[in-house]
Structures are given as structure tokens and as C-alpha cells.
Length: 246
Image (cartoon, rainbow, N blue to C red; front, side, top):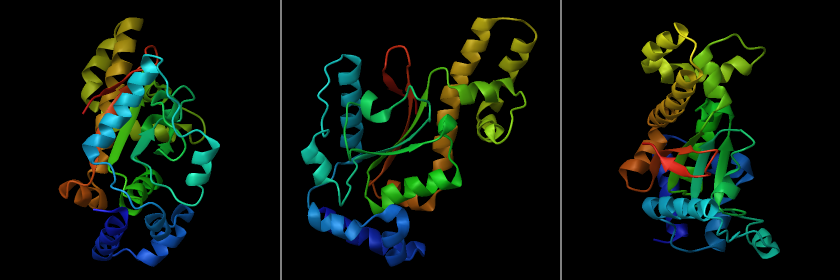
């Protein structure tokens, strides 16, 4: 199936979902899906192929066998008027987690949504839906990371100024299953126990945010049709490796 045919399918899908295609296509992020379909009529990645492509890039990064693909002036011009990212990331805004670098990718490869704690807000969800429905991206990865400050704040539960507390509150439901361990931590001073609790909470948060994505009718329709896969990953700050945790 060509990208142009896939775009027609998405138009029909959006009509069923009650979304105005002409408005969505022209206004969301300045995208022009119809034009993109004409520019590049190629077979898109399958969800599994996209995942393997993503992980292969991460292994190149870990092993320092970098290829630096799609970072030339030619690539810049190729995607100047249309985008066809093969994967979408909901990742943390942490400066140590730059997606294109740790997956050894380049311009136009990833649709990257970054927010502290890799949490699913309404705006983040809308961005992910746009990538999947309008751009046909076959893979969404929710990517958490080791020693995440947002998760640490949620675990400690201390007051935070301004809107900083908002992302901690969004993570709190993910760590309710860890409450017994938290109680034990409060009864003894043990930095290693605190580190373990935070790391467990990082994974729990990734899984929780993936579950929140399952509340999207748009995304789940694509999953049922085999056009989209949603996974969770954890990035190790020490080794640079991404592990699948869902």
C-alpha cells in the first residue's frame, strides 16, 4: 500500500471518528499530508520494522558505531515541505535524553514529543494522535529514563513551586503500587533503597503512561488494524542503552 493510499484511508478513518479532515490537515502543526503523499509514494515501515530500526540505531549509539544518517543538507531539503517520521517518541524533556542522538537518527526520522516525566497530557496525546493518524507513523514509544527528576519528585511527594508540581501529580498514580516500599523507606534512612524506589517508579510510570494512551479511540483503532504499535522503553543514562519495558 502506498503512502497516498494510506492517507486516503486515514481521511476515511477521521470521518468515521467525527474529525474534520480539511481543518485537521491544514491547521495541525502546519502539516500538509496530501502534499506529502504526492512527494513520497513509498511503502511505509511496519510497526515491528519501525521498532527494530529504532533499537538498531540505539545499539549503534551504545557501541559508538554511529552512522549519523539524514543529517546532510540534501536531507534538509528533502523534508523541507513534508515529513514522514517512522517513529514517534513521548520522552522526557531531560537534557541528557536527546532522541535523535541516542537512536543515531537524523532530520525527519522522529516525531519527538518531550515533556518532563514523559507524561500523557491532553496536548501530548493530541500530538501523538496527529503523528499516528495524519502522518501514518506506525510506532509510538513512551521513553522514560534512569534517575528521572520528575519521577523522583513524585516519589518524594514534597511541595514544589509554581506549576512544577503538575508533572509530579501526573506521575503519582503510577507509583501507588510502590506505596508499601515508600513506607519502609520513610522508616529508615537508606539511600540505596531510595534509589531502588525511584528506578522502580521510572518503569511503573512508563507503563502507566502507555496505559493512558490506550484510552485514545484514534490510537486504539490503528492498533486493532495492525497499523500502530505502542511500547514503553527505559533509557539508561550510564550505558546509553534503551530497554523495552512493556
